[in-house]
Image (cartoon, rainbow, N blue to C red):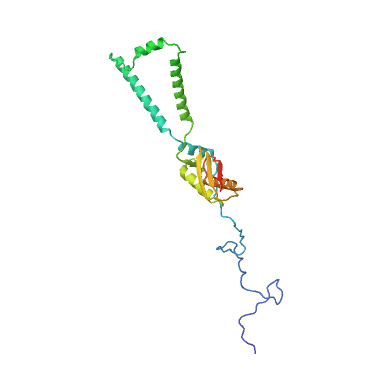
Length: 243
């Protein structure tokens, strides 16, 4: 008499040696190298030792020029003063011309005395040279104010798109750089000021030996500037004050 069997016996699979035990269960998946992440069998896992770095926006000259033009200072005060002077001079000339055409000149400007002085004075006269020099200086000043850009209220940030313009306040920009400088080991206080297009970092350290600390601060701040992505270059200068 034979006892009950649980099921038909399965023979050895092709290519399997007789007597070898076969397991119906699938092999256990490999342990993930990244905590908290499971992987499927056969999936390739790459260990990540550093956090992902944000991708810097591509440099496009057209987008950078559009951002600089958008945030360029308007020179409101010099333009207002110049416009006001031109309006006053134009109104004075208009009144003099219209009143003379009507036969009742107001003569706010003493033309007779000016004409007499101009006809009796040579070009080499010191007064004439002084007036000509003053007018030339004022003209050059206006040209410089129009051509040389002033201090922008916002720092243009690179986006790579001429239609997308983003600006950052200089105070927020320097605060971000100062925070990065304070994160460097060995630095307890740091301030950042913009000297034109240069980021001037003043760092304080309680250490007596500060060898290589200034270079570490400069490298960290430079990397932070690259991550923020301003449209222009901002070289970093570090003034390290030790104990």
